[in-house]
Image (cartoon, rainbow, N blue to C red; front, side, top):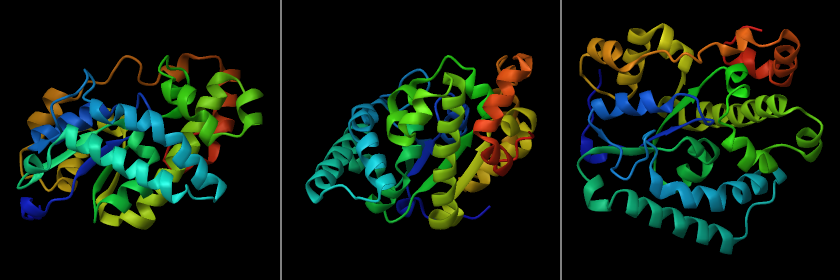
Length: 259
């Protein structure tokens, strides 16, 4: 594995649509000596960014989708709020000479903004089968951000699981397009299913991306336990699953999910 000076290491950011399995990826990063902060919830999310995301994700995404950038005043306020949240999450003095970052799933909406704030950063993009996601009780991102990501008819005339799948497709396609074209080797997509079904191989991939030289075998053995909800969509009515699949069909294929 390559070695770089930690004094110059970029921040690590872990994001996804909600409920994708980012917690275990964050745990692997912590075991690889990344400082992801201390004010975290039980899922390991950095709480200092919560208010920033609530305030700015929808205006930022809506402006980007419309092709009408936010006003200079809005962008200045957004930057100010972000750096205030970052300073609360981890003061600048604590970031120097260490590997550091944060895990908040909703950063998946803000990759262009983040790149405008850092010379570079590492992004781990966690994906989970949208058929499982659409049947989850965790629909917080749909409730909060579908108004920015989906058109009104898509929200009004689709079932909740279909809208969830459409949001999954829209958000993850947007993030993957940006990561592949702009972040290059600093972008790593990880499927939660691969982490559960091929734990050692996928842990090695993550550790290589993090430039960590620790033994992956004990991490894969002790940290990765497939949840009972993995593959729950297979027990759902076939008509419901067909509608969900249709709502996200091209994205399912892009990310390697069978249809």
